[in-house]
Length: 236
Ligand SMILES: [Zn+2]
Image (cartoon, rainbow, N blue to C red; front, side, top):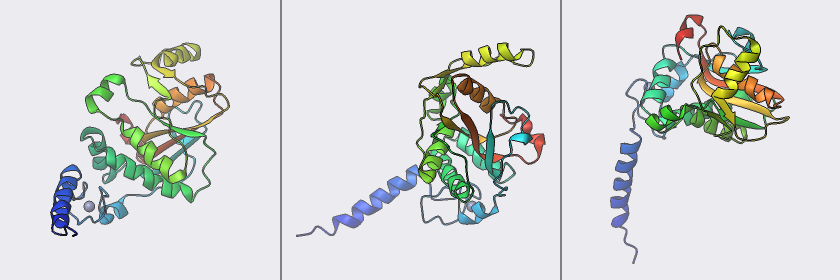
């Protein structure tokens, strides 16, 4: 005999559990009926300002060793609270969602060859406090969509960087080598570095310099958003 009566009970418990984990409301407008597990309702997602997918490396303040820089959306008033919730409310899920959406957009563009994707690493202390790295979740979503492998811990942050403004190039490189450790041979590899927001380019550029010094062939910076208004450069 099939115990049919148990199934609805299990279902409602299961749904309640899922709702607890993933509240069924839009994280931007706080409303919206979301049928899927998406963290943003379709109305709000449509309002995000898509920016043209093109190489924006020349727009960066610090671009050393970055070959191509691609971003999907303007880091404006709609996306800003989403990204902030991603960082401070521990919503790894939004990261994966935005990574997938970025991947969908890049697929319609002839994106450069990448052997694998790596996230911008968090300092171990921050990682311990937050329990996750948002850039890693963006990379996972993006990698799924583009069919590119993600290597989460290829680069580790081992030391806080000191201000580099007074250093010459050689000293800067030594400083960056102290800040990041590479855990795998990167010779001749084409690497995509993933983060949430691209502003000055300084962090990704530092990583790119260390990777190229270790023999990497090309570096692509991939971010969900970049501010079109460069007044937002103070965001870190
Ligand atoms: Zn919404």
